[in-house]
Length: 393
Ligand code: AMP
Image (spheres, rainbow, N blue to C red):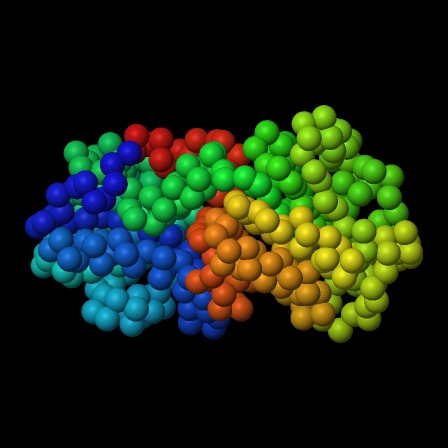
């Protein structure tokens, strides 16, 4: 894969697939973490006297023109961040939009409307890809968040360019999630949480060969605890994965990987911001109660598991962090990883909820790398090849 820094950009029209799939609140960008992450690549192109055409998806409009999924609010946000005018086209493949791209002066930036207003984006339709390719003379992919998908804007389009490569953000993602974690400085501690154990079990399996300690919290911990025969009350359990979780615990033991699971929890009878809650040992959970955060004893133990780590990978909250009473465990993990990072550890955070929790607390700058991709980061760490990267290599 060629890095953008190795390409000659002067006088070129650089078509960049970016990931501007950001949360909107009432038509205004709510969190522009992903837009800010793309700025180094955009600035590089402008400094090289290239013109820039940006394309992205937003939300799930499923091949239809949905006004709520327009990229227009992103144009406004980007204008402020980049401190220059952004030309916005209300379509991504129309002749008018292509004419705008062809007429760009060096340094000008043109943002196209949502790629997923057309079904051809997600089906990787060759005609749609060819029409997108008309916008540029050089192609760059900087959209890590969709790199695990084979779509027209990140796979089909590539064949139309002699000069194609990855942007600075994509290069950073690969550097940290692949190169750094494939050869970690030890001890290497992985902290996993969140609800969707089905998405992460294969990764846990793969990590047994790499990590020294595996810390598991959040909703996914209860399937492991159930596999150990522990009482979990009405906590989130994926019955179909209990056996698999048990096998992983066995494998960890034989491979000498230490596994840390919750021993006490914050218990509630419902997941809501007004729910009554109490701290209990797992064994005292009532049948109608569920664990919605890790308890204080577990916090201490998880903190000790992280002590002395030289490489840390974190993905997934320790509890239902959307509600203040259940944020403590996630906050503790964040603070402990920050402390370890200040002492020289490399801290890498998978995208999705963990990244937004950190950003919400304005603590992003204290981590070594926070990925912009949720699913893509799990796949890359798990050793999978990503179609968008493969298309460029
Ligand atoms: P994931 O997408 O798998 O990383 O899951 C993130 C979600 O997990 C967040 O919305 C959390 O509220 C949720 N979560 C974390 N801990 C728990 C728990 N103990 N019970 C239920 N949901 C949880």
